[in-house]
Image (tube, rainbow, N blue to C red; front, side):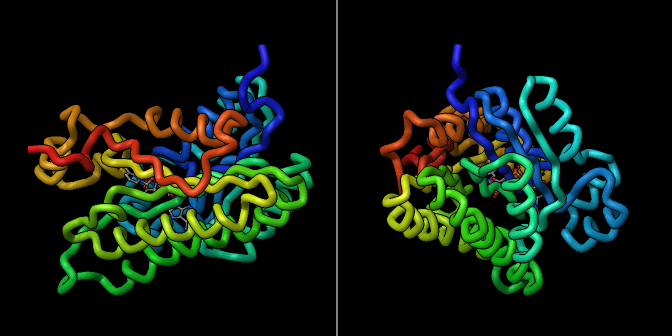
Length: 277
Ligand SMILES: NC(=O)c1ccc[n+]([C@@H]2O[C@H](COP(=O)([O-])OP(=O)(O)OC[C@H]3O[C@@H](n4cnc5c(N)ncnc54)[C@H](O)[C@@H]3O)[C@@H](O)[C@H]2O)c1
């Protein structure tokens, strides 16, 4: 039996844990060879310093050894697929270009890009907004996705086929109290998605966004418990989603079967965006 993504090469950003890791495993399960990338990687000599500069969740994940960039590639190889892990900071344009070039050399092509890297580790009202976090969120969530799209574009264009998925959020479509920086970047992601969908169509490159609600990842567990309960209460299902819910939607959107879907922002949000009362 042929698997839906057999023969495809996928690259996932921010895949040391959470949704990125679940996506990498799901794409492999669907037949793709997968490149797992993250700014955090187990054997980085500089790991402590990097995580310190990234923020609170990264520091906890490093201290508790919850970084799975390399180990995820081992799981993928056990499924019989090719896999590689790269340290890649999405904000570093030249590092992004270098990694994409190395992937092209090692794997022959890049068919699928999942722009998953993101920052969701703080909330603050505008008067208390940390300016450094504002700048960082724009750089990682928005410019990071732009950098990766731009670097992969020539490869997809040349082969006249490509699939790009950008991670938005209901915080981008609905706004979020205390989430000015995060919401702004996620709303921006939808603009980037639609514009590139228009530009990509002539090369058979589809560009779509996933609009998650609240999904049970390490980052979600890190939120304030009472805020978490209020968010769960807003969903139609009265529960958060699982990383697999996102990965399943992505696996479909990057398949051949989804070739006529582009520029979409697909909510995978358990009805959190509905008029509940
Ligand atoms: N979990 C949710 O409820 C939820 C909801 C809406 C949207 N999202 C989006 O989904 C994506 C993944 O969310 P998650 O819950 O798994 O978050 P997470 O914080 O667990 O994972 C984010 C990953 O991005 C990596 N990263 C951070 N900065 C980076 C950089 N400069 N370069 C490369 N990698 C970097 C981190 O090391 C981490 O592995 C994010 O874009 C997030 O905004 C998540």
